[in-house]
Length: 297
Length: 326
Image 1 (cartoon, each protein chain N blue to C red):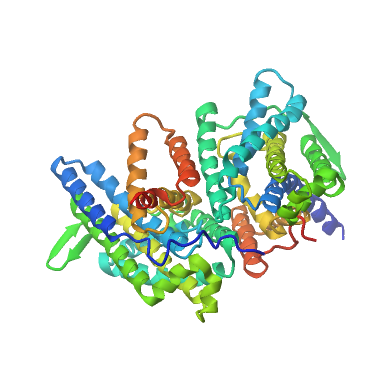
Image 2 (image 1 turned 90 degrees about the vertical axis):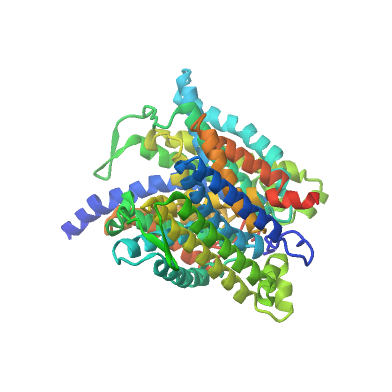
């Protein structure tokens, strides 16, 4: 009995907590992706690069002497107009084409390529790492965790709750959901649908940027940082259901736990193929994912 | 859910294939090959051969995207499969060139059928993501399997001779192998053009225009989708098989999203639905990379911007834009 408890405490619990902190990070990415898809039908292939952009903006702000906490607030605010303009200037151009699924996917893929190379040009290929804003470790249930990771989890929960509240409990969120459900009807009721689109894209991108700053002290900052992460976020969004907020949260927790716990039994290098395997299985048998999309039930 | 992928109105009953442009391509390639041989420029001949090989991969993507209306983000799966299988057959089984190519084509068809059964269950954007996921699994697996050289790749593929009746061309001969690859790629193009003009192929093209109407007419779209998927898998696998013959190795990068994504860029730049545009696109892309590469290592910014411009202003691509002017 004691041995079992100790296994739980020292083998499983740390993995669960590590999985949770990764899970929070992935959910922040997945939320932006899923909201953008749910409303605009756009698979944002550049989402990982917007995450990296947030991290690099954060690094630049730190570089000119801004404090970490100020940067954490400033970066999403800077990302909002960037996202808004990106949507208005680029995505809107191909949005009304019948091929929009494919064309917007290709366009954001092009953006991803350009942005990644721009990061290399501007900041060099080597990883940068800001100082951890909350140093030290905390003991919790007899286990030691880096305090920043615990903080990260707390912030993640707050952000997810805030997004949930905005989408489901505010007038703005109601407009977004209405536009996702039937944009023509929504437009005839006087909602500026195109601006709602751009605003939603900006909101998703700002979330990615916020995640970039939050995670910079943990995973460090490098030009391809978005790429490794976006695969996981894509899997989460697909398993949860493209366009579903609830799905992104539940699948995010589920998949990161699968990844964390499976690495106790199989070599960690195989946990990625495992997660993608789950994604492919879901696409095969339940392509709409576990939950319905935004504005639909 | 509405299936938005059912694409804009097809350009009339006329096919978008342009045999004239294919003839021009062969003439240009022969002239370029000859010029390279006369000036003794081995580097550019090898690079041109590589451009043709990746052009073959892009043609496979175009067969799916431009003909069947399916965006594949994982065609590198079959390309890398062909490269690794050919490498193993040439190195460890000691097979010669043509049997290797035949076996790779056959195995590519089997893999294509298996992956196709999985992938074409999904429609539209979900198809794109499922191909992406499948290729990602394969890439991670190959990257971690020691027997396949893991992250180093499959090294030491021997230089083989390509038997052509009474003659034999060593793969190390820059001009000779360039011509062999050109011939193989153009034969694949010719076979595809022929296939697309048969009633079966016309139904395949109808997938892109309106898959639903195809089933109203009593044809099962599923069969045509699977056929297109298998054909594209064979095409990509054969193109992949040529890679280790040219370079002497196969690396996990061949399976990465980078490779699949590049093929999509090539198709969009060259012209969606034209098949031959993929070859033009590939040559132009390789040319751009090596020209810009002499000035800066950040050629991806330029290529990415060109790609975005192409997506926004010429969704039909280079060959498509030429066609419109006529």
